Image (tube, rainbow, N blue to C red; front, side, top):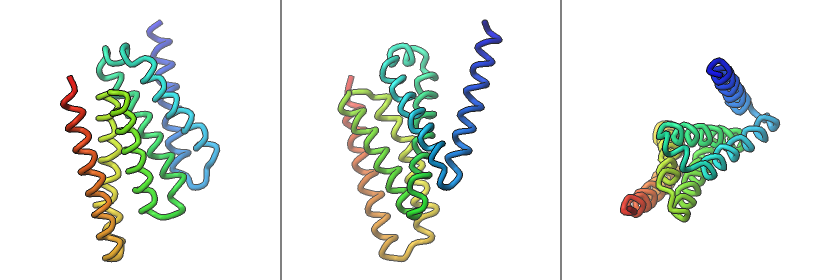
Length: 163
């Protein structure tokens, strides 16, 4: 049984890495479809098996990180043709959506997992997008990112107050 579990885990890891590689290629809609279903399946798995996954603390985090990674790369694949700022905007919108859904369902772990995506998006905006942008676009990027980070911090403060 242990050898079988290890074999299944290795196969899942290899398939995940294959999806990641496929999503990093431009205009690869077949991987985008598979990765989208995989990310939604992982998020659904988290919602359905929430109690069991939370009992094994690292498992819930692993499932959410894998789902968010596929979503981040999927949004990259979808929006990279429209420019770097569009990729960042898609990531920020996804993070806000996850946080709002977690807030509405009163799921602290899901809401806080959006910080993973927010950190990617904010890091990309600050380290990459701003260096290549015109001054007006730079100001708008900083304002948009600041509003999103402030709103997320406000929402996270409300979530932390839950018992």
